[in-house]
Length: 251
Ligand code: NAP
Image (cartoon, rainbow, N blue to C red; front, side, top):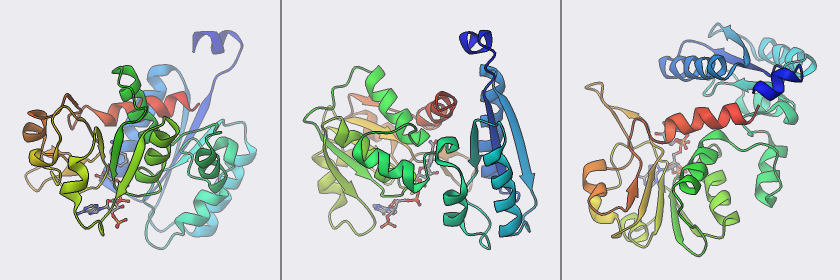
């Protein structure tokens, strides 16, 4: 960052938030704080929930043509807005989330400029922990475009043998039991129990689920799974902070 500043480069990220979803507000505030921490310029565009598709696309068009380096539109959008059209409207070289089909395709062929922040954070955690993915049985639970699918591609590029599970998977427990590396990105509190984890497996919990009593838990039953796992990420404090760190790296 110091080197960039010395060269007169002061990267900027535009964050668009539509409506007042409390979870989205927390994510956006964290991203803004991280921008300030690393010395980026961050511009927030907080639009009312009744913003029209045309208004949102006009803002993206303006940002596409401005000197801002990255554009991030916080999802989910209110139901009347077309998420796909919004993702497609962001210029691929400013798409720090890597959701644009051009960037998704680049991830598929392993020749990418940006990575979606959550899967990138998971890969960084695995790498930093000195875990070798080559030849390992990797089971990803969840097939969303944001987490599950790109996660699976990154593990595959790192030479893992990858299985993707989803809501129609017939025997989830048996599939997860085969895994040397488990990545849970489901959104169901503590779905993955200790008896599904192979002795010595690496367990990465992407899930962030708010319970009715206010507690934040992951998709993995942490205390049960940690008795079996050789390494496991907690929720909160595991994958979440890595996601933000990766977003900063994309700029
Ligand atoms: P999503 O779009 O709702 O996708 C959830 C996936 O889980 C779907 O593929 C779904 O299968 C699958 N699934 C649902 N119930 C299942 C079950 N009982 N057994 C097996 N698979 C099941 O969610 P997402 O956006 O990927 O997010 C997943 C979780 O990660 C959420 O808790 C979210 O809050 C969290 N998250 C965390 C971060 C972070 O920074 N830490 C970032 C993004 C997301 P189908 O495809 O068949 O419906």
